[in-house]
Amino acid sequence: MDGTKADAHSCLHSEQGAVRGDRPHRAANPVIKVEDLAWLEFEKPDLDAAERFAHDFGFSTAARTPDALYLRGALAGTHCVVIRRGRRSRFVGPAFKAVDVADVHRLARATGGSARELRGPGGGLGVDLVDPSGVPVRVVAGVAELPELALQRPLTVNAGGGVNRANAAQRPPREPARIERLGHVVLESARFNRALDWYQQHLGMIVSDFLYFPGQRDRGPTMAFIRCDRGATPADHHTLAMSLGPGRQYIHSAYQVADLDALAAGGEYLREHRYRHSWGIGRHIEGSQIFDYWRDPDGFLVEHFTDGDLFDNTVEPGWAQLSASGLAQWGPAVTRDFLEVNPAMAKHVLSALTAGDNEFTARRLLGLMKVARS
Image 1: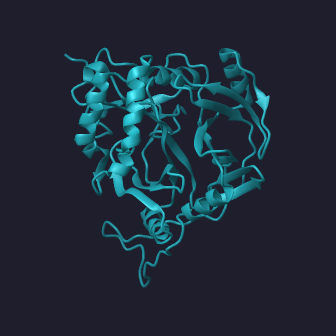
Image 2: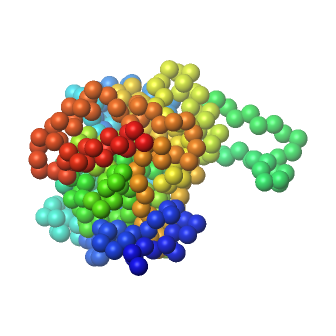
């Protein structure tokens, strides 16, 4: 017996389960359990340009000050992106939503931090931390929620032999795909295992799927799709995904839209306005969501998605080999732009290999090169 949990994965998200000796997919006694991402924070020099793209991508402006832009989706909730005026464009970090203010205080005590009142729209209480990769992480609670806006309704579809629409044609408008909510963020770390341990232990997050470099299963995972532990309430397959790499930190963020037609028509709108398409449309394997990737004017990768997996806390983690061709069930071949195969990548790799105090070794680099070629 090799310890493989085959039954737990029959007809589920992965054909492989864990084997004896694999790293745990959850912490035994986490400090708290966050329930979602609250928002992502960026800095950009030109807030006007950032707001124009945001509206074309499908966000609404929740608030605007001379030095900050707060963007929201149409579902009720807090703002989901904060862009502050800065000298250069950069990703600052994520903010996670705690269940209540007591959890914020508990996390602050456990980490030696201080809970503080938040200034700006929505107020609330937060504690500021830094993960082992050096990414600032804020955990918040008590932030006032915004009311629901008009939603982009999914189309009524004739499918499976059923007649749901008669004497009516489909004419989805070519307009921005209305963002409903923030779904997930993907980060890269040269200290992958230390960072993953930190999110599991401090924020109570659990792994839905592990991926490993070709031929390196014995060396452990190099990517993890991580969800919030809401008990019996299903949560997104991943709210955070992390991958081992030379340490560029932000990879992409993803925002839910109504359905495939909203995503596709919204993509045509972006194309007409000469924004840069990166990859799509397709359907992912881990998470199952239909995706379409775009670059904002500053080069940040952002995703429209719909129809993602939802897991409660009983689903065991899957294990699979990471490959470029295995990123989608269907759709066009993954692009060099999405993989960020460019001269800047070589600079990051050299820096990571010479730094020493990380997990990105020469053997891991060989594994990453195999992924890009697979």
